[in-house]
Length: 168
Image: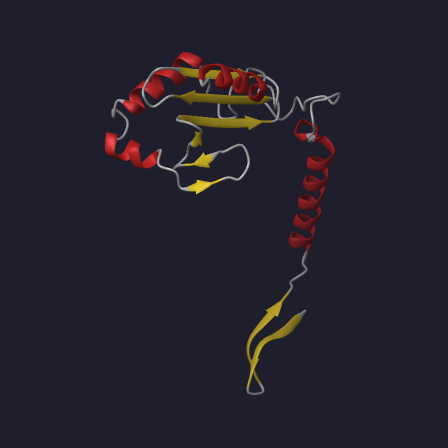
């Protein structure tokens, strides 16, 4: 099936078509089947109040899908190295933690890869189905905290409480 496309002065500049052959028909069916299975089995993306986590989505151990894992001590070492200028220069760190945008809710601003909490806190947030992570650092080095959770939304209440206590 072919249709004219981009007509100009009575002429067709290009044609668009669809080829339906045995290979493309099989691929259409397979892609549709995979899309259906993702919808059926992806319960890990649903809320964790009463629903089960999709055990097929996450690895058995508490680590990233690529086999990477970390500890709170590793993240604290990362913060120390970053703010000491051992990962990127100190001038680059200053640029990374400079506000680039403002959020009207919760006084959150965003730098280059970091959330910037009021009054002076640099934070990393991350989550996936069945896991969550929040780590924050006072640029002056007074404190660093990291919360790692095995629930999708589990790190936020704890980290908000810690932040409230530390910034009083």
